[in-house]
Image 1 (cartoon, rainbow, N blue to C red):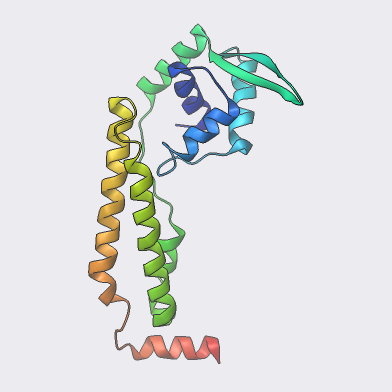
Image 2 (cartoon, helix red, strand yellow; image 1 turned 90 degrees about the horizontal axis):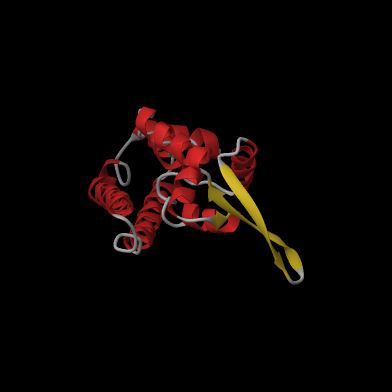
Length: 182
């Protein structure tokens, strides 16, 4: 699924301006599909050009006109078609995990800091996600619950398995670190 399809989906729920869509991406979608203005506005422009959404401008005093988007019947059909043909993937890209993969080359203090920071971020994420669980549709609540459970499991795993990385007696690790740090 791409940002265009997600914008259609959100607009099938209610009309919105780009800022409203960005707020949804930053809250409800934050833990699984982040998107910013750089992808939302081009998606909306493409959708409008394809006549999948309509745009009306609302004048504002001292500000540029506010563009409010509404899905068209063709947009609704395109969205439903995309939902029914998409084979959803569950992709994970993590700079944290990529870094930890090379834990044998990172000193214990840095590793402990990385692990602590990740657990803290996960706990913050759980709080943010939990705020969305009861506020929305059953699908949105399910997704929020899923995100909270995954984040909680990740935090617990880091806490219960950090001994595998920090405080281990590893001479090879010490050699790598001495070479890098001099």
